[in-house]
Length: 91
Image (tube, rainbow, N blue to C red; front, side):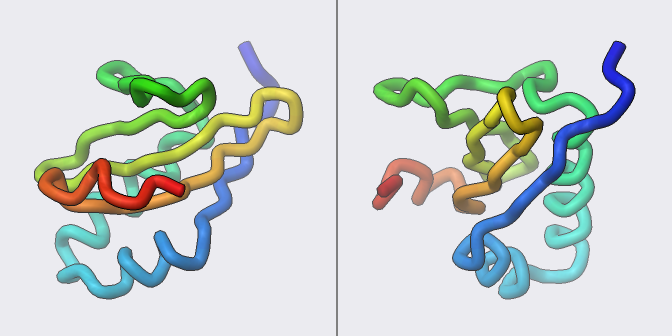
């Protein structure tokens, strides 16, 4: 068991996308994001095909794309996207 969890960082572009959403959706996504500090690879997580470091979790019709940096205990949220837009511009 870990004594401390992972730090969660959110890229500015993901934060901007989060702020554009309605309050209820924003709350659900925020809760899911910050739960990653305790369990960075929760049940239902998927590793993105073609990437060694990107994962996604599903929250309703939205997907949270993030990377886990185990060596420094950081989860970096890269994108928040609707299901239909998930694979556009992952750079």
